[in-house]
Image (cartoon, rainbow, N blue to C red; front, side, top):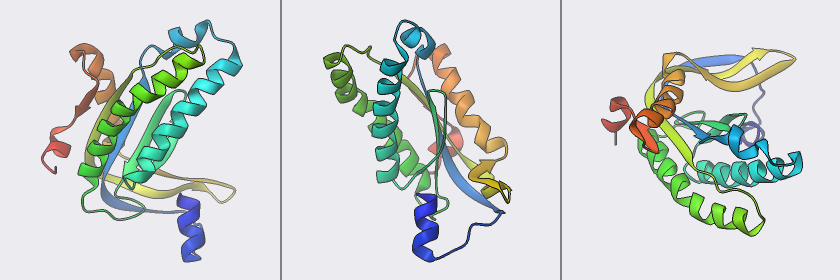
Length: 175
């Protein structure tokens, strides 16, 4: 999507970051290592491909951008590069929709003798440096700053609270 935006506006990619308030989402498949230990690599790839496809589609529908896939985790951003004053609401609503989408996805997995999955999510809103980072021969769109780390911590805290999604007070105050 970031490349498509650049092409649509005939903009050139350059290293450039700006400070912006955004909402960042982070999710992880619960017990993924245990789930795939007994699967052949092709089955693991099929499971992850379907999961990433469906979740990315939801992120796109809510105006978010997938920043990266980290193993079985997804990190996405709302409010940049496309400005959205309702980025907190978009981030939370897409997370709720992703959790709901697991039912259909798990039916698809079971029909192909794949294990069912569950996810944990964290959503946080705050200021970050966002934009194209890296160097001329290797750049990526990303976000840096304390705000970009909080969603992963929230996702991890779901284990302690036996929940599926946690949002920060900063996000809650904006929805």
